[in-house]
Length: 561
Image 1 (cartoon, one colour):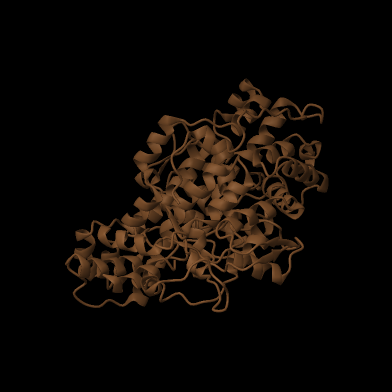
Image 2 (tube, rainbow, N blue to C red):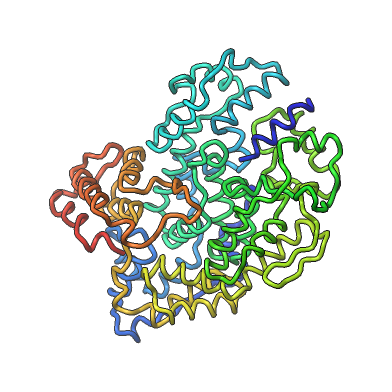
């Protein structure tokens, strides 16, 4: 059994949060409801103008009834409701009925829908330990890998064994009851579009989109990241969008998708560095494929993209010290579909030093953690602190003024304008600092700032392809029976979901989205949709003037929000 341990670590070269009440999950540290009092009337706006503006900025577009509902409720009351969302149990039931993967935990998803390389290694491990039938031959992995990526990008739901050169996978996959990885990829993208189109909690969906993009991971890492992307959004992003920024920072840092995507799972103490524990012979076997030495990828993006910003005042030495603090933070070797008796053996060996720990998808390996002292941005971290110094690091970064500025500017740029007013950003910075990084209060300060209500910000932001597609569906109250074609159209316009490879996430500025080729695709899509000619999408019978509808969709105004 022992010789299979290294194989498990190879799988992890690539935390399911406990179920909580909806309000607690989304409201984070705020124990009371947050009420807004926006100054639109003082700025000379009518109720209808304010409603239209807020729908543009904080929803995926108008529906036949939305503006009327906002005006009946009152603009302030509607906005307060969006900032304090409550769960619609019927909506949740419909969501899980249509997309069952949304009801699964991280562990259940990882065990049921492994990617290609994990599937192959799972078959190998189980055939040797449990005597199940193996492949019975060889397959061309490189060829299948390229084919898999193309199928994912095309939103195909084909099984691995239905692909060219994949026939040998059918019998062992069925024996092990492994699910269709491609169907996981489809359901993940489809549920995002379903939520954006139909959820009453529109601000929640916009914020999930914003924060996923901020802490971007990508399904283009098809072998080691893609399987965990849905749980990343559900467990590390969605619960924290209206809570404290530090909680989201910690959740993303400890999630297998991020640990693998930015390579922290292979970041280890150098040969010369002290560690919290010494590996015994079994632990060494288990980590035989892990080379000593830090990997700076996550540390660099943590400072540059996630917190301080590119001009945040850090140095290369700070990046190296942050990387040292986070050595030993890894993906759990127990996350994958392996025999239970092997899991028990691995867990006992992985944590037998009494310091290392496995928490859902996160593994802290004390024998790979640099336990020496460090200095980050002038703050000294004493030796022998272990995992706790990473938590202290996050607190230091959240409380740094550069983080308040970076996060505030990025939020304002996403919601308001490509070049938002500096005074607006300053209001948000102050709220972020005063509340110790509370995201709901930071957003509230933006809404209540007079600068937000400047007429020049009407229709100031270009819709991304995803926003454009969803806004057309909402506008004509379309019903979607199959999301394949509609997701393909988002890709044709330049935005395959969850598939932006760089850690920056998709850009949000106009020039990136509204180029000549993309506009041509939007025009073609608009006319096909208006004529009810997109498979899987059905328009209501009362829509009779398709020409007017198409013309509205291709208008310059409809491309903006």
